[in-house]
Length: 483
Image (cartoon, rainbow, N blue to C red; front, top):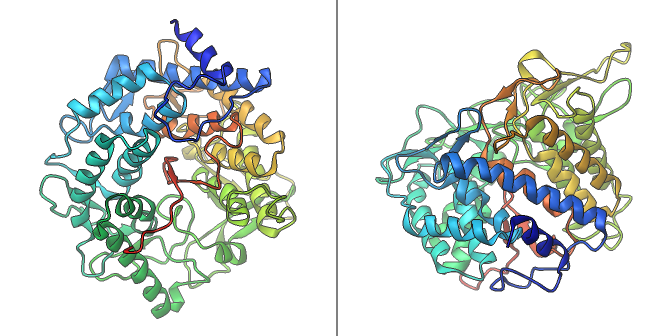
């Protein structure tokens, strides 16, 4: 069967499910032709990205599409690109690609490497990807065996005096590798889903206890350091040795993005720009001086739009949850609109990595400004993630239109003829200068969320699934009695 015919079958023959071993998450594919055509275009984009990677660098951890080279985190590779993209392949029912990557995992993947890795990135990308694949494959033991092997190699990172994990560990020896850097708050606290789900699957409490100790320590730390804990907001770095905060800076961008407290954000960080009153999330340079806000927002922060509304609805739609008029829903919609405008404001229709906001109500200038050093775009997923979540929970078709417009800009300016997609160095100029990178999150997150945006709402229903930091869907579960 030709690839195009295969995609037609996937999108239009609702009775035909290629992965018959899947648990019952499948739904009818889109019935209206426009939505189905758009979903098919997203699948084509994934296959085009995969074509470049698989031809030039299959088995490598990272891909450099302009030079057609791959790069490994460790000798022989850790399967980073393959495992990060695996559940996207499964959700799209791409059987040929699936067979290829499963064979590689079964015959080539080996975590016994004399290489230090970042505990957070390895957990959210590789461990999370393996656990998601285990569930979506209806419990293929290969993925659980690999997940247990990897988790056991990461556990020594938690053997600190405080219980806060060190940021790096050597996989073959368990030796700590911090390179003199403190742990980031987000990285230390955002390992809950993967390790607790692994305990649920195996019945082994050691994974659960390791990450629960982190949260216990954070709870005590915020009680004992009230001057450095502002309504749930905490600094972005923490010393694993003594368990104390290592800075006073607060932000929801890198190093702080996946540890957040909604009440503290609403009380201290929500701001509006001038003259058009775009809602954004500011930064604090010193948590002891909360009135001194920095009007800067990373694209990474754009996940918060979806998080606000997801917290309000718990995955249901806003009407069934009876929260359509709640403050959290309003904030989620406003922040996502701001993030969409970060795309809309540039010549390419693609957002920069960082924007600064005009806070002077006496100035008639634009609401947002992009500094020269921040004009790059790395094909990030956060805005698409929030657009997907808002569409699922409101049913407002404008979110599909927003997502489609962003997708078309990716297609126009980042797609490479020979295969793959490239990041951009400057989104404000046409033609934009390309950058020699296609990060794994483009396949694992950006294209997955776009695919789900054009899928029915009961395909990976939000009441039954939680996406980890790297967009790997894990099932909601009730802990067993011993957990």
